[in-house]
Image 1: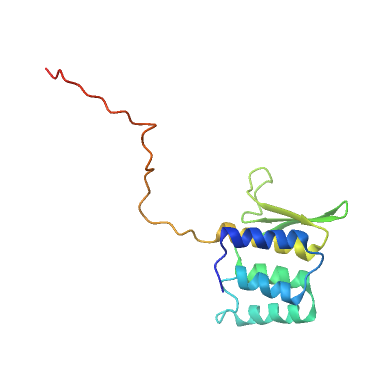
Image 2: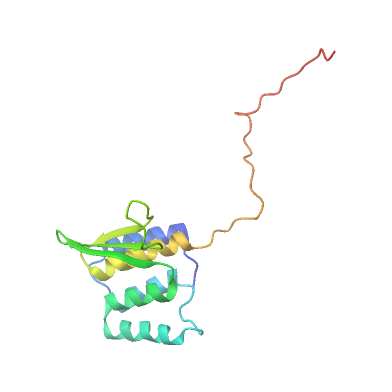
Length: 154
């Protein structure tokens, strides 16, 4: 299983946007590219539930179960059907007012794909970055630094 990188999330996001419906193969691609806990030995009940839902074709329930398994800190804040599209909002702080919350919002004609799109974006945001513990310094200091020579010191 690979960690979700910027380029793979862009490709996966485009595939989700262009998808008409979810298939078992598409779910397998999403899981292989985004999931770090699947299959989870410590949470075998949740893992087997996701597998059963995928096998039965319950795409919406599988997407929500995958969200619960992989990103338990994220919750569905809002699911709305408006003008032929499902709008999904995921949030870490669901109890905050909308204007204070930093939620992820996606939309698609298919409910499961709208949820999966939000899931992929939340995975991308939640993925650990490869940063060092020491801050980096910009190499191009010419714009901020101009040497000054002073000959008369006293």
